[in-house]
Length: 152
Image 1: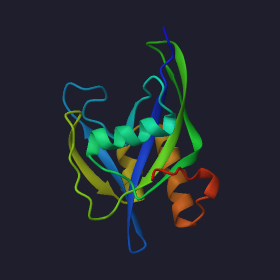
Image 2: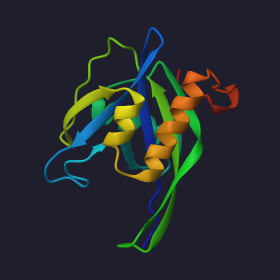
Image 3: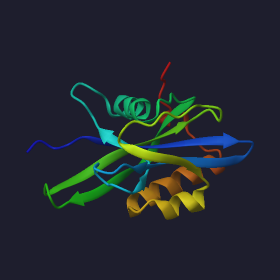
Image 4: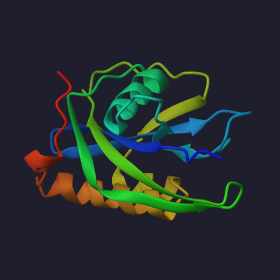
């Protein structure tokens, strides 16, 4: 079995100095049904990880970020069904506060959450850790130029 290449993406918005994180609720009949999650997906052939993250954002929400960067951390977990250990790069995307979200069929609803509520909604510990790391970077205003991905 070929190893899956996956991405995680944490969209956020800033209104004044308040940061909220976009979580999507997985629809009935889809993997992770009923769970609140960030955006995730598979990397397609001949696609860079960062390109997959931007594509998944657009497909799942209709959004295009104002700022896009690689989070300096990896989501690692073991998948018993496939006997694979995954190392998934994570990205963050700043979304304009007035953006219109259009969900695809994979999700039933969305909501913007402050960090404490977002962490409580996400069930996977590694995703909670990456969300906490993202919030620390944002609240300390420490996004390094090396992490930025040019999307224009």
